[in-house]
Length: 193
Image (cartoon, rainbow, N blue to C red; front, side, top):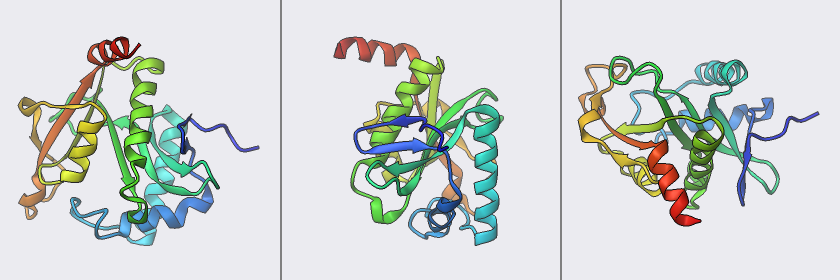
């Protein structure tokens, strides 16, 4: 029996990863455009290992990067999720980030904005998170634009040099941090009602 999806939106389903999603997952992690702001692209073996880790993390904690699939046909097109940020000491160890990647052939349709908006709602309404953050390389205008569209605000006092970016890639070190607190989210929800 197929487990129920975590979330559904008008066009999308956020669901567990399936064995049949491995090719798409590798496509994303090996794509030059998708990985432009990362210091490396992954081989098939590296991609499969990450795929297995993501599945295990979701099973253990309920947090992680879920497959984003089109409702029509259930084809995986990328991923989006809430996960431990894991960038100590730049952020506190309990910081939860929202993040995403999407296969390039699906860019420009608003899918990540739709999925991420639903996840913010889930994070604040269901998981009762106090804050959700997101961060990206300072020149990654596409991801920064999504952060703004979903209602996160830049907090320049919390920008940081990513500790896992190699020193020989100074162009990728500086990360801008965007955040949204539960209080601000609730205030916006009450204004929409």
